[in-house]
Amino acid sequence: MRLRRRSSEASAPGKVVLFGEHFVVYDSPAILAAIDRRVHAKVRISRGKEITISSVHKLAGSARAESLNMQKIPDSKLILEPLVECAKAVLLERGYKIGLNIELSSYFPVGIGLGSSAACCVAITAAVDSLFHEPIRKWICTKATESERRIHHNSSGADCSICTYGGIMYFTKKNGLKRIRAKKDLPLALLNTKERHSTGELVSSVKSYRESNYPAFKVLAGFSKIISKEALNAIKRSDYLRLGGLMNQNQTLLQEIGVSTKKIQRLIDLCLKKGAWGAKLTGAGGGGCVISIFPPNKHSTFFSRIENNLKKYEPFPLKIDYDGVLIH
Ligand code: MEV
Image 1 (tube, rainbow, N blue to C red):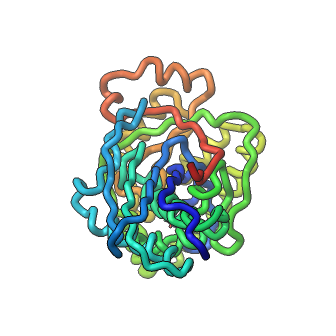
Image 2 (cartoon, rainbow, N blue to C red):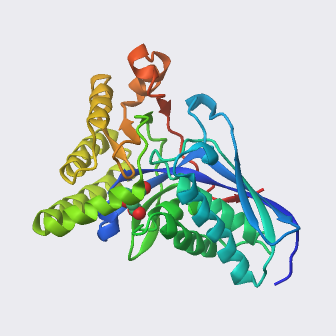
């Protein structure tokens, strides 16, 4: 394949898991949504044969959240090395051994369950591939998922799928994704516990739980499947009260497998006290973010009157991204 340009840029959205995290690794369904916060990857061919990755500090808009600054985070090497491999994998496939400078910038924090690793893998795969031709989404998703598995070894592939295609989707490992068409915007809010976590470690801890409590895990996975299926119908009917109840039930399962924390529970209680119909952790847990759903009229007042005790958790209304990966 011939080179068609010397530099390129692609971006991919972050994500939230609305239902079914962890159980999705063991073939239960999950529901995910892409969010309007992106990771950008700028790629430039360099003189040498090295691939270097740097990140730029950017402010995260209305969330006021810190942004991805990989060099500053303690386990940055663990993330950066697989990302270099991610770029290499594309070059290998296209038959090139060239040096690249990759500059990453993100509009949401890393390590809080919003899919920064998946978004980085998708954006880098797309940006590098677009040096050669117009990339195909299915290929980006497959390649990015392989790369994400170098970061989170047992990943289900759900995160890379939603970051590639955007929107809201019902995902199973066996059948991949099915797009869900919501008639209205979901009145969702996100709060950041500021507790950073490692998805890989949490997935491993659930694996251990499953190995030592297999019958109980099977029952919980069965419940998770029913909840996700019910949630699919509730989204289609715009029944947010039902959706809230299902979120609360899902949270109970996540507590049971040990991925919730005291702080997550405290934020959930705060949301429910403020009138949310339901709330749960989103993503791997062990910290990260809490997602809640409000009655539509309370959703806007929640944000217009944020009290001091909540401000530090940077609550922001969640908007769904329908674009997925973009080449700029
Ligand atoms: C992380 O966003 C979701 C998990 O279910 C892991 C995975 O699906 O790979 C915890």
